Image 1 (cartoon, rainbow, N blue to C red):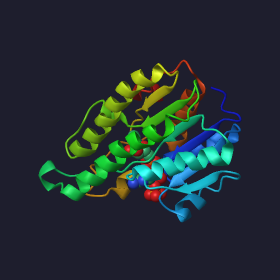
Image 2 (image 1 turned 90 degrees about the vertical axis):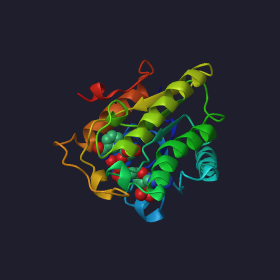
Image 3 (image 1 turned 135 degrees about the vertical axis):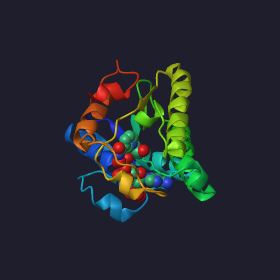
Length: 226
Ligand SMILES: NC(=O)c1ccc[n+]([C@@H]2O[C@H](COP(=O)([O-])OP(=O)(O)OC[C@H]3O[C@@H](n4cnc5c(N)ncnc54)[C@H](OP(=O)(O)O)[C@@H]3O)[C@@H](O)[C@H]2O)c1
């Protein structure tokens, strides 16, 4: 996929990984639509010419509006990168239903809604990439529900990817290891365990952008991050 000139939607662009990915895509000439939940958080990215759209991905109507806005702004949508997500920590017996709902609505339902909105507009050769995470490969105590949401996303990507392949659309499941974005300090519930030093957000974004630009890549497991 030629990134230069492509119209690419980055959901979660107001976040650290989404922001790093968006910066790199802008640098190679992609035409961007950036989404987050607030105008203020999107303004922080300061990417010239990017089209900002406020969207809460838990709402399927918001996903449709986001993809429609990207299509209206750039005349087409070639790829969607979903870097939106939330984390929660804590023992299973301490997780309340609001936390579980936000985890699964954002990390799973939101990704599915976004995929449903994007698929009809993507041309053959297009890509939908969702960031799940290394925890989709192996779960840990204190992260059971977060890990389950990411494993659900990974499974969705696998099945959806096989469907979309018939239309020559590539679906990427991206599983970075722990990364120093500060996400663990923005948990919607619980306190993070101690993690070993993580990767830099820039190093993770480099791998993601390289995968987007290389049609031979069909999966981005944790092992690809070195
Ligand atoms: N950091 C890690 O160690 C790591 C490792 C593996 C995978 N991941 C995954 O990578 C993704 C990005 O993580 P990050 O570390 O960059 O976190 P981050 O900086 O907190 O970014 C999270 C992004 O998700 C957006 N978001 C949250 N809930 C949303 C909703 N309901 N609707 C729309 N957008 C929503 C946030 O938007 P607002 O600005 O509006 O809050 C923000 O843009 C997440 O899915 C995370 O699970 C992270």
